[in-house]
Length: 324
Length: 247
Image 1 (cartoon, helix red, strand yellow):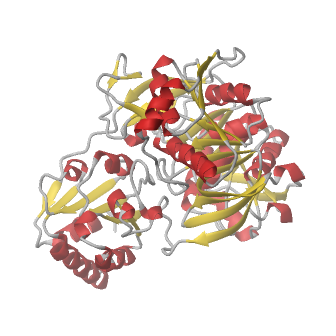
Image 2 (cartoon, chains in turn purple, red; image 1 turned 90 degrees about the vertical axis):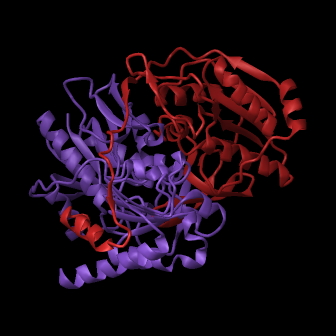
Image 3 (cartoon, chains in turn blue, orange; image 1 turned 180 degrees about the vertical axis):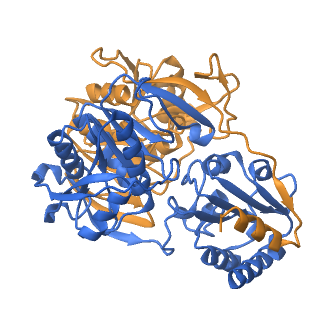
């Protein structure tokens, strides 16, 4: 029995979600009395792979071939399953990213494993691998068990924690050449959205809604987000009206986020919006309506006109940065 | 071109979720069930192919008890040609994927649309497992799809900070989200026609055993009361956030 991490890289770099999944894999391996090993696919430098050692990985298998440079879920899943079989891993852990969710179900079928999707707590090996995940789009938390001890686990971003567990790490190349039939859906190009910060992985999200009165007023939201190193988001109505791009829409039918800090500006907090943000660790709400439902789940609230409050907030942050 | 649209039967997005029994089941009293919004994007895209002049037949499929039939009728009213209900309890992603696989095998579908996830269990595992069982290509979180030939398509797939352009071969499983099409509202003619369209009930295949089981549902931890800060004192908010190490 051993635990294998799929260490996904984005253009040769690891994101925090991967270190979170590594932490999860390491803690699980400790419970099972085994080591955490990892598989990496695509072009990546040794120096970047070595970072995995900080988070508990003792050995990494690198699959690097021209056919695997671009993301192809069938080929990637086959490569991961191939490593899992060769090292006799019956548990595969990965971050619940877009690619993770495309690969995990295929790997689960290949390994005849149970798919544990989006977990937010450590599995209990002594009790049917019981663990938990969000359900009903954040309105509930489901505790569930697996009949099998062969598992594919995806860890929800910001749903667990990151801890350093330094190991000396070995890097070994692993030969895997995908069959032509496994290159049946291949990424040709990635088109970047304007903001560089990924919404699902951002530590801080600054989100605004209809209270902004129009798209021309978003400058201060972007300034605030820039100061905080935050991603920008918006409510459904503002995306529907074309004030903001759809990929910024946060909520039950948009993107679900769980940042450390979510700042909601001029958003009343319809139940569908709250479902997409309620797992945020800390919530700040700025709204002129004291009855806005968003205040019910806020940690900090300011009842006031956002056109007064936000510029003051920007100034206060600038001052704090200078003095800090 | 034969298209299958998988439909999840879920509580409406405005539902206040309550659990009953030992906390292991949803209290369905007063809850309106609808087509999972993401599955509905897939249905709309399928109808879009017909409107573009392609010769398509659209089958809507759901796994569940008789309670899912009104939801399938709605899919028929929106524009599916026929519907299938696989009579199994859909509480396990592997079981659902396996049931759909057994139905699809040998039926010459070339595209299967699903939602990117259901808004009740939010697992997003069924479409990928289905693709793997079938040995088909799979594109998840699709925001765009155009056919480029009899057996090829180009799709856009959401990724962090943008989208990916994907070239894929058919047959294909596509999990859909916002952007791939607009929802459609059924008209009276569609609603009348839906009553007469075929809705077949299929017995589940027996080979599958459940792998995952729900122990209980809890509510997310309750929040402590909100700390209100005076509107002219943004500096205090900044102090609070700095002292908690948040900024």
